[in-house]
Length: 253
Ligand code: PGA
Image (tube, rainbow, N blue to C red; front, side, top):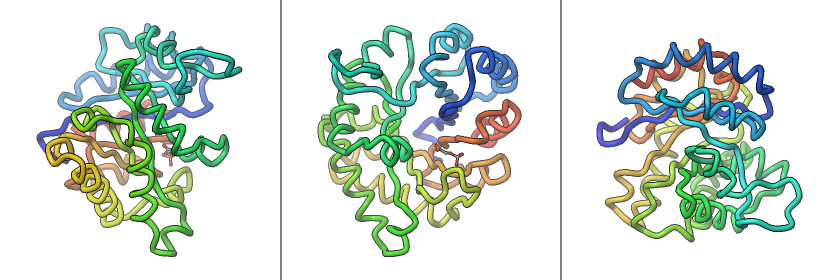
């Protein structure tokens, strides 16, 4: 972590928590994260709990993010949600391009380029997820994959706005597997991503936040968060319990 960049710990709840469950979790979480100065904390509940979580976190340090959105302002897209619908709820931002959405719901880089731009235009902070599969890493294609995703997904973002995007490096083989990247692997990829942003703007690359995601737990958070180019974490499983998520927030403080 660098002192120039405020660390962000974001909990991706995925398709977990009814509104009632979400209320229980946030009430347990709020007192546990209230003293972590100098760290931004975010939760990413399912759409149905966004409104309730914005209400419950008002006046606290916890930001609320959605997990996906459509790029169009409105239209005949049954089941989808637009950026304007999210900003109307006072949601802070949106996770875009999570590997589960790419793999299971056919989200493409072309669509993501439009989504990132639409989120920024609506005043939302995008957390853009990128990362390689096991096979791509084995083949030595990690950098090629990251270069492609960063180039395409940020292609519609103006140079001066690059650091408004948060980038989450999430090796797909580490998500939900308990198989965390080594500090060397995480630093190498996060540094590479920062350098890719630097190819467009050196200044923005010093400001942009790069998170690590994939089996982050209280036991491994400290060493990952200490890495020079890792500015926080995107946490899945360990964000579903107040105690483990708060311990990861504390590790960033
Ligand atoms: P995990 O998920 O922490 O459960 O591995 C991370 C993510 O999918 O963002």
